[in-house]
Length: 220
Image 1 (cartoon, rainbow, N blue to C red):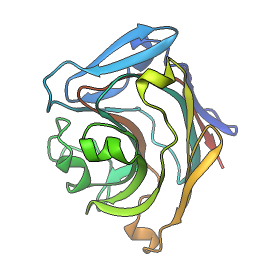
Image 2 (cartoon, one colour):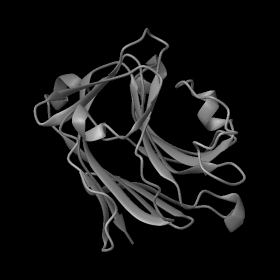
Image 3 (cartoon, rainbow, N blue to C red):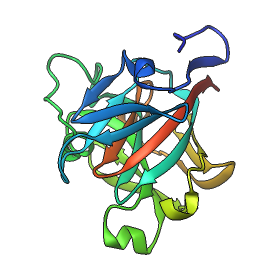
């Protein structure tokens, strides 16, 4: 794992096991294990006990973040936050922020500003019946873009990893899996009212078990 460098590559983390996320911040009952040279994440709680895991770095407004993802056990849901900061100013861990424990409303309608994309939506029956990737802007829980989800169910993935890629070029967001662009969207809100520099976080809804590896964040 590296700290932010001065070149094009801002951050790299192999996500090979729990030691690689020692400096990350968990909100909710995140359970981490090493599995097949990857980080396996699951909830240590019950059906409604979800979690978010935050990378410790604050990234600039124009980045490309990518990582390998492999679903192990479903149902459940995988999501990524990016550009996360305070809703009006400051950071997501400032002392005046409301406590967060993995409950989704704390993220989509609380006191943080962020984009978040859900890309393995398999928790509810209607999600499994019609697979989509969803981009939302918060606070406000606004669905701003949607695309098809090419990820197979666990039984067909058979342990394969898929490359997830988020491009945040200021107000422009692009999302791709294995090089296939699934949606692009431009935020027309004023610069001071949209997510800009901020943090990246992984979120899972129980009882999903999934593996992650090879996180990289590049400056555009």
